[in-house]
Length: 301
Image 1 (cartoon, rainbow, N blue to C red):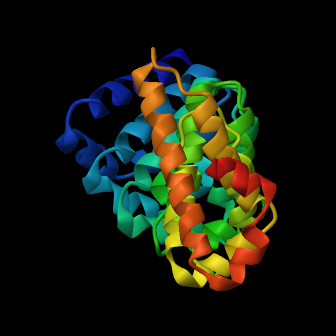
Image 2: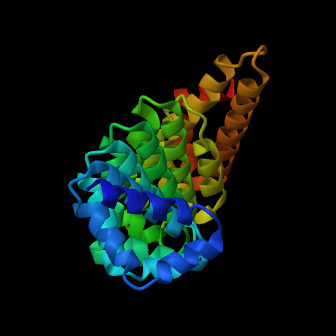
């Protein structure tokens, strides 16, 4: 076992030395299969850890990313590592490998649709349940990388994903994880349209995420959505949206802190975004009656 650990450690060191090494090691006959066996099945946790680091570093090279994402055995092994590996650092390496592979736009649709969404499911479970802050942060980063116009509908429709992003963005014990989850949610929101079945679920998720104390772009997303005339009636009628916009206006004003210029600047931006969203929604004549509420009027005073 010690000799095997030493061999994997040497490979990990060689991989961590430039793109040419990463390309050569990935293409070397039998090397990837051997690393996958060790990463998932080896009884020695140090061997698994070095194999996981090696896979993560191999996936960081742009020249390797497309070919690695096409390898079903590789993707399946990474998913299993995310879900069942006991060593936190090795789980983190597997998640980071998926995050690296998702950086290449050509890989995103394949990763999202792979075996009916098992990559998304693994990342969702890691984000909501991994005890390691770094793993949860990496999972949120991987979901952010996966998000684009081509994947948004599939991701938005994946059971529980939008809800998980919203809850983590408000309740995770790490403010950094909260921010990363909110970033993934708002990036996804930018690509989800009213014509997609997941649109009402997205609005629910944005209402929840707006409660986060971590920095987020929910108010900006709502402003952009409200700017589109086809969204206005559904947004005004959706439970919680008007209350959320009013609360952002009121809370951003009351929470302003002249001594904290950065925080104060964010509060001003949030209030401006929410006020503009309200303005856009009132441009729809059908909304004006239901929008004449105490909450909206309080926000305007």
